[in-house]
Image 1 (tube, helix red, strand yellow):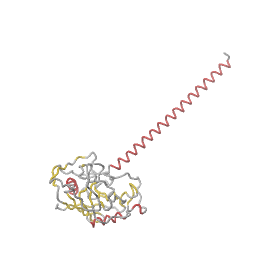
Image 2 (cartoon, helix red, strand yellow):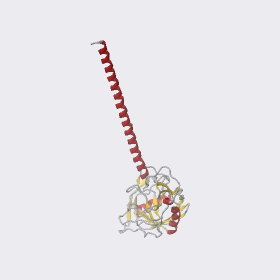
Image 3 (spheres, one colour):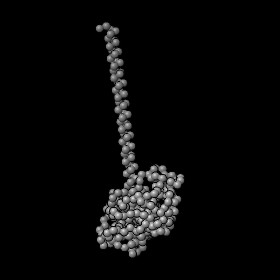
Image 4 (cartoon, helix red, strand yellow):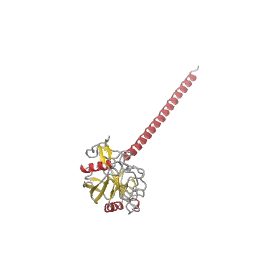
Length: 289
């Protein structure tokens, strides 16, 4: 083999090795790009799941934007509010004279320190007046133990421990099909509770309308402290929320004013914090009737 031929072969092998190294580096770059893309995709998926879960552990609170803004137009206010009161809910089949109530400690700590009610029998009859003294006026509630005795017992327990005092109603919805004011979370986040939960007290015939008082939840049997007042249309609600009383006409007219002032959107243009803040200064219960 001539020297020239040998040098040509060396040059060819050198060029081949360089090409192989370049191809390997290119392959590694492609793998790295795929890995980074995969990691980003996983993070996005995880983040998406977190947003959904975080926003729905808050007792029926839908996903919300991170940056609320002030109402900007008619879309942030109700198009109309029904003025006729709904018929007070009534069970088609009455409960037994007494029912067993059980209150289970939650995994999440209480938003405000409070003791749960005692487990055991409670009468499924009688009404209990409760007044919420708020920044927009007094809201007068009538709790009905014939509807939901365990819920009424819990609510009165929270009232007696001043759990609702100095808390804000964190959610207002103004769209057709869902017009409610939601309160009962001392954290104001929409995901707070009393540190315990209890079972639903619902029935298939249950309907909601103007003047109905009901429990918010984040799924079956997750009742805690959050509740909502239906001030208008609630045709979009399924019978999955424990109704436990009613709200009188003057109180609803106060809420109408809040609704007509609009919302600061979080879960959409018709769902968010009330533009007119509603703070519960004190909650007091009168003797049971």
